[in-house]
Image (cartoon, rainbow, N blue to C red; front, side, top):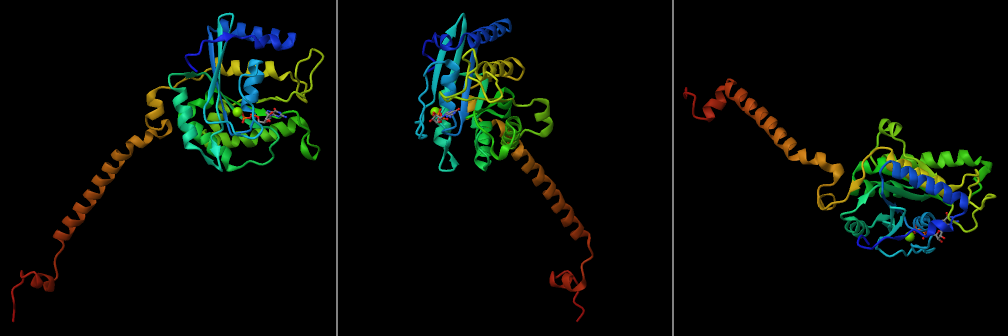
Length: 311
Ligand code: GDP
Ligand code: MG
């Protein structure tokens, strides 16, 4: 909760020495940039590994992990401090139910976020998914509807289950690139991000392996099939997004209740209708004037009683 006092970040001491050194170095980078608080919001469908990723980052079991997707509806926030720096990380339940966006879950998340500032969004999905479905686009659209498309300037795509052997003998990096492109495509569609905008500000994709069976290097750090120590890599990517431009999102009442940030153009709809009405009215008037000017045939004048009866 927002009012919860932040505890000392003890989880950092659970990491192998090499990871700790890297994390402390990264926190130093944040200090240089005068960033003393970082609030990370974690969203995505259920069962993607959101809560597990939260636990992996904090290095403590702070979010409950559930293999059977019953996550409850309430988000949770965990706060940890270290040497004057505060890390807030908000875990949310999946917002999809029975193939549709669960508006109730979206409403609860929105209210939970009231008066909080989101610095970075982690959009969590799985690497080991071979087929995209339109649900991904729906979830991205729902997120965009809450915060506006600017949220994607402060986002990272996190792909869990990254310790895998790609199918059909595909090379690991090629598989990751293909899966990332497929998902990014949907993020651009759902986030209404044009190709040009995307090329200017690419959304980073970061790999995660939360399993206790994740391979480790000589220093005991958890590594991916491409030998990257993924925890410091993920934290570095988060910090790069937080310090690399784009605005943090302040969630206020207006954002929660106000017009959908992506639909602000719709405020012009009454103006457009009034404009169209004026044009149509003008056209009508000129038609009527033309009709008046038109010479009327004798029989019509006669019917109107305007022609002299000649019989
Ligand atoms: P959430 O619903 O998105 O919060 O997902 P959870 O973190 O609760 O994870 C759902 C299930 O997937 C749990 O059984 C986790 O142990 C498992 N899981 C999560 N991340 C990973 C991962 O990176 N690798 C593997 N192998 N399992 C994972
Ligand atoms: Mg969860």
